[in-house]
Length: 337
Image (cartoon, rainbow, N blue to C red; front, top):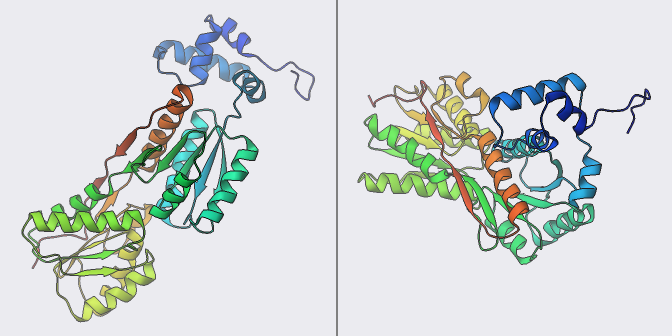
């Protein structure tokens, strides 16, 4: 193959010869295979940079009979969690040498899902990654009986599917445990929509943690993930304060809550402590900086692609991988007055 200037483009064999290694070793480095010493990997990567070598995806596809493309089904992508999960999957796929084709679903219903899947099949994708915020989407996907690898992100997977997820229940329990350690006995929850898997599981974790501590779980209000819903709920809570701490289902609702409290003269954390969920980039710049639960979306993306590559190699079997969240303590929590 030649470039537009007429110069022959460097081949894998050219890299191997210049680096003094076999072409199999160069292939392992290019495909990020773990069985390469760090010294050899550095030498090969230096030669790749020197020669300007790039993989010929088309030629590889002819040999492997794969398109090197993964289809990603996504719904609710404007929301912070699904959007950043998608970015994590895209980055991991790119690092593994795969292109990503994205189908944003208008809804998670069977018709919309079926159209997107048929589009992927026409493209000849090697596998499908499904970002599943709603349980019914998973059920509709299962009903299609697809004959190719599927990895469900945001769920443990069911039946024939492998799953990659952040432990949402653990995140909620970490939030409640932190507030209990601060000495709070009345801990409310502003939850995300309960038809979302994440919203329901976080609420379940909140209830479990309070129950195990012998504390009541009687302040539960459902929001819609938006700062606006957090604001409207916060205005009501500011009038009738029945808790000294609130675990909020995501950082956006926490942002609205903080504004409502500020306008009403409710001090955070002196009067009420607040914990969010997600650790979005702006969380450290809220007033006050927000204590929250961090989800590692990059790691989630890597785990997802590890599952997908395993399915493509082995062709059978399912498994689940779980990423543990972490609490990030900032200035929105303190012992009760």
